[in-house]
Image 1 (tube, rainbow, N blue to C red):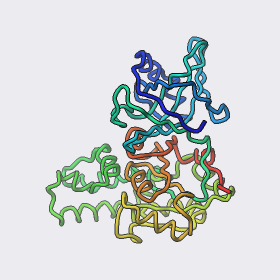
Image 2 (cartoon, rainbow, N blue to C red):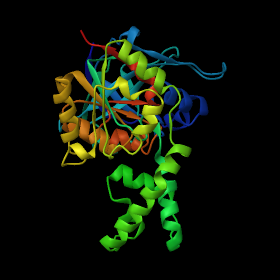
Image 3 (cartoon, rainbow, N blue to C red):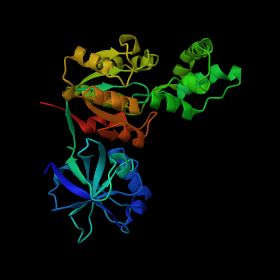
Image 4 (cartoon, one colour):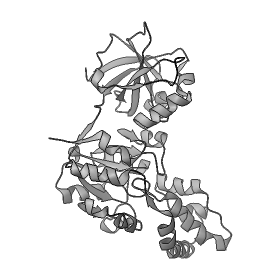
Length: 345
């Protein structure tokens, strides 16, 4: 059974305690990239669905005082076209009522889906692996640990003016696709002042980049494994390529067939222009490709381009933001991509 329907129902109020257990939270992060929102969305089903055992992953408790559970990645949707990614949880306890579906996500699903008790929901099972012919990948926060470095360069530029840079502000600008310097100056800065600050940050950038930016652990091996499997790779970044030298020094740039930067497009993400240009260069269809990124802007751009959106949690965004922006899959990091993706026939 690939999909089934149910009606939103009230739970017993125990799921909030379960999802806060450290081993449960860690297991969901490790297996599905989901930092669970306390509680579950409960659905009452007409009959028990036949869930494919081969697609399930098991949550195993560290001791005998808690029950294990089988989990399936699912897409939950409404008749109004609102959807979200979650995990269907089936506790392995005697007498468990299979006509109840408990779904965990990184967001409060009732609010995300705008549903109330009694509303009908469709649940579609996601495959254990995604078949793709190609992957488009964001750079900063996805392949490279560079978000903090941008903050460091900004802090050096701002310090002579007595301005302090909050790392949360850097993340906000990346997640919301807003100008960092406008945020720092409260939206009242003159364009000449903004340009001066930006130029000063870029003056510091080479030293900051070389000292602080590095490839995330496991990413180099993952990229090589993907290419060896026949999956085609491309980079699509909203930057002008300020961190690409790090990938070059690591011997990774040659793995990408094409690179699209801000210099190649007129529209920034979440506009899909950059992703569509990469598709054109690769001569692939959107349905055969996924875009991998770390911010809501990346997820929105992928969906606007008609491709799947894979969110990673190592960069600027988090599971709630990425789920809210439409991520089809969440991963702890890009190093997990070989375990998720296989080459389509």
